[in-house]
Length: 301
Length: 144
Image (cartoon, rainbow over all chains, first blue to last red; front, side, top):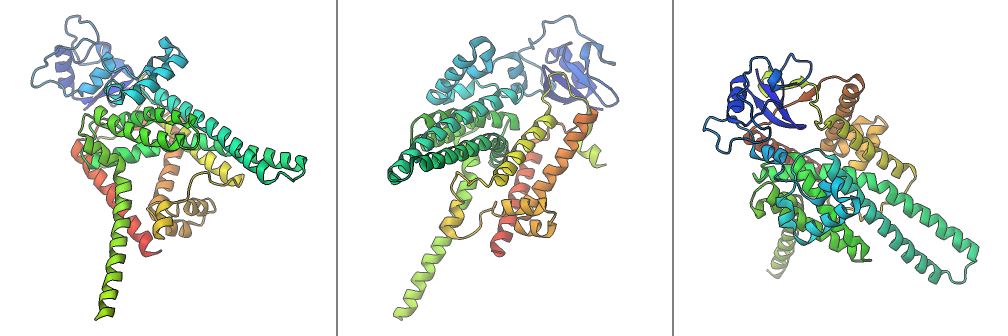
């Protein structure tokens, strides 16, 4: 019967009793880790787990650096994340840095040094932090989109209807402003929610290229923090396009670093749906061109 | 037997463990609510129409998504399947999962969990999903 092991809210995997005992002896598990197996109502610390013998007292969170060849197969990323080797970006430390400073530092890290930022990114620890960051970026984007859309629509409306009754013009502008604000307000949870779907599709495509070495949560975190590029929405007209392109680049770099895979696999995972569509479009046009050339050749003959 | 083969188990959440059921329910309800509000208010879509359909005149793999969900909401299952079979299955799957999440959250039941699967199985699953998307797209193109 397998035992589930959990440390600080993160599942380390399922192991047999012998593997857990070996892990305890070699320091990969500690007495404060929680264990559960079928039949138990709640999780228990390994120190209270029936059938396990505790080794001599060891400092928690300090595993033996060179486990033996028959060591319990714990993913190094699981241990590294819980030991704090991967603790970035700055947004994950917002309790100590402060909200605004953590936000700005995260933008600077992801936009200016994406490789370094994603190499040190925490790959587990819950969805709350990246979700909150993603939501804030989408809200910032929406606010600027609303402002620019209202300014642009307002100035065009005023120019086009300069002879119109001012009260009618004001009513028209007010109504369209409400519609624009409502559109973007509804779009915010939609975009944030659909990011989970995008992360799922990206993770699947990455798996097709054998580039996914970590969990879906790691992929979602990369996509969420890549939304730092949406800060370019501050720039009117082309800001959205710039931000989208840089977010895509950051996503590819981030996936390569986080999943410790080659860049082409990460790019393939992100761009596969686009490649498939382009391939089909290209194929259709080639067939069309071939048909035209063939009919011209038959006409000449 | 399937449960033993896949090592499925029902277990309680560990302290500080991510509550995936709560997360899934929250996100799916937020997305569904946003879409409903969008359609209920009759707001125009702010983003461009499907570029693939615009360029080629052919349906993309997700074409029919809106018509499918609208037919589903009106209990017109035949039309919903016809518009996009794969997305129909996704919507039904999401509905089933939402019901499961609601039950376990309300009744504080143990959670369904799978241990980490080997990379080989994940790779095969990815291929299966890709094949399903491809077959669905072929169906949409054939019935265009």
